[in-house]
Image 1 (cartoon, one colour):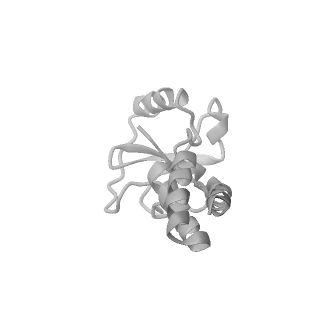
Image 2 (image 1 turned 30 degrees about the horizontal axis):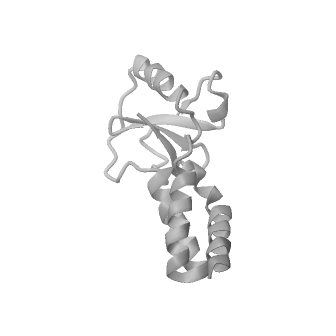
Image 3 (image 1 turned 90 degrees about the horizontal axis):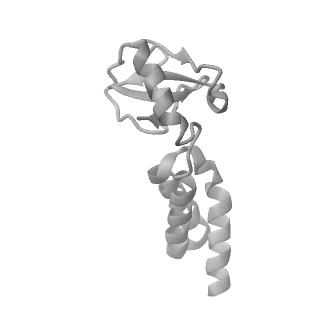
Length: 137
């Protein structure tokens, strides 16, 4: 039984590495789904915990960069787009009506992404899919 739990934990850890940019809630949910699929209820528990831990890692912009980036965006006074959906990691924003801005070069870890302001929240989005990958508050 212990070996089974350790195996499930290792599998959940490996599978939930993709949850890194999702944040704690989405990482936990993803880990629980993968763990339950692979090993049932015990796997769901282990996968949820491990996914939450991995999802809680800093994300694209590290903890030290977030306040500085937030000030950078606030200083630009760009308008906020009113979005009727939930502002959360993974939400896909529309192609039209939203203005996406280039991330400045000093934030090299986020250069492949764009940012915008949604319902008063600064968010990083995938440039191709317009999916929110990090909320920067």
